[in-house]
Image (cartoon, rainbow, N blue to C red; front, side, top):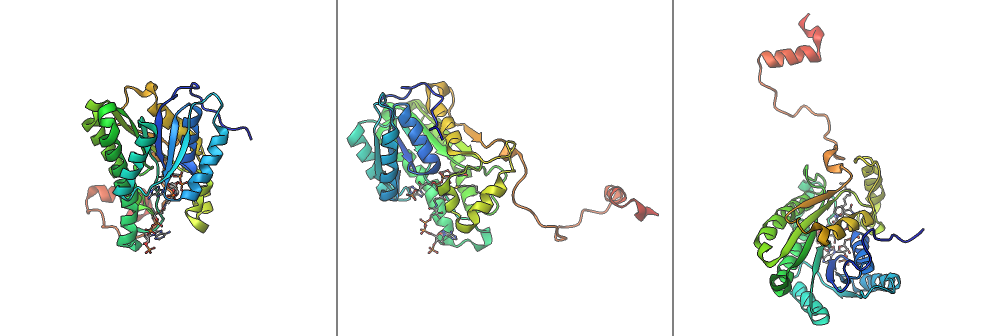
Amino acid sequence: MAAVTSVFRPGLFNHKVAIVTGGGTGIGKAISSELLELGCSVVISSRKAEKLEAAAQEMRQKIPPSSPAIVTPLTCNIRSEDDVKALVSSVLNKYGRIDFLVNNGGGQFTSPAENMSSKGWNAVIDTNLTGTFHCCKEVYSAWMKQHGGVIINIIADMWKGFPGMAHTGAARSAVDNLTKSLSIEWAASGVRVNAVAPGTIFSKTAMDNYKELGPLLFTKSAKFNLAKRLGVPEEISSAVCFLLSPAASYISGATLRVDAGQSLYHSMWEVPDHNAWPQAPEGENLDALREVLNPKSKL
Ligand SMILES: CCCCCCC/C=C/C(=O)SCCNC(=O)CCNC(=O)[C@H](O)C(C)(C)COP(=O)(O)OP(=O)(O)OC[C@H]1O[C@@H](n2cnc3c(N)ncnc32)[C@H](O)[C@@H]1OP(=O)(O)O
Ligand SMILES: NC(=O)C1=CN([C@@H]2O[C@H](COP(=O)(O)OP(=O)(O)OC[C@H]3O[C@@H](n4cnc5c(N)ncnc54)[C@H](OP(=O)(O)O)[C@@H]3O)[C@@H](O)[C@H]2O)C=CC1
């Protein structure tokens, strides 16, 4: 299979520097690879050093000879403010600038809300909401406040709630709002802040996170969008590269849904038939409704 080639102009991001959290797998790997192809040096960052190093090796082999880009793997748990400070400081020491921050690292587990422990809830909120905040704040304070830049937050299709993953729905919705607040507060520094809300995007690592449930969740999900197929990480990457690029110079505070209309369509979560709902009030409208539902009842 041929390698995907960016639709953007070669050299578009020459000599820029990006941090991509979760940059070694799935969506983050696709974003990092496309940025490298376009000339941007990328720091890929997540918790597991071995995984990052392997991803960096693979990416190095694919950087076009014409690209001045360098890829650097650096470990960081975004839940820890100290880790994030150390990451940003290392990037500035090595590269002397940070043009782009892509807050992609994150995730969750499936569980009905009533079975979530406080520890599990906090793990997901700390990762997806607080982790994103840590990265935005540190990159802004240490670099973008004085020099400008672009931040992209990867969120999720939580627009109709997120039954089965209520913790991440709450966290991502909060990041959608954080994106707007930061875009306003940091506008005068020349910082654009946007979000991308993916639909269901297949990668091996994303699916494996759900263990034996993974294949079922992903295959079942494929029909709940207008394309009638799953997305792939490259389809998120191109949206991110657009928002990072000068083509999006008039876009800030926005969330771009890259979901083939999934958020407009019906949900995977089935509400079972039940009689638990309060009855509608008696009156002429309910009488008329009963007649429509059961015309013979009048006889
Ligand atoms: C319903 C339709 C779904 C279709 C799929 C469509 C959408 C796909 C969206 C995606 O985002 S795919 C990307 C998937 N990738 C990831 O999620 C990767 C990152 N995920 C994680 O790191 C974890 O999920 C995490 C919970 C965010 C963090 O895990 P970690 O192991 O670092 O946390 P701990 O601190 O060890 O655990 C804390 C606590 O959390 C609870 N918990 C963790 N995993 C599970 C689980 N699988 N099931 C139930 N509970 C879980 C648990 O209480 C843990 O505490 P302990 O019990 O271990 O003491
Ligand atoms: N795939 C999909 O359908 C969708 C994905 N998303 C979101 O997109 C992002 C990328 O997911 P995807 O590529 O699909 O799945 P992956 O599981 O491949 O990616 C998740 C990445 O996040 C990193 N990560 C997790 N926790 C932390 C942490 N505490 N600190 C730093 N890095 C962390 C992981 O690396 P490590 O374990 O080494 O820390 C991993 O690289 C996630 O935020 C995900 O929730 C949103 C909507 C849909």
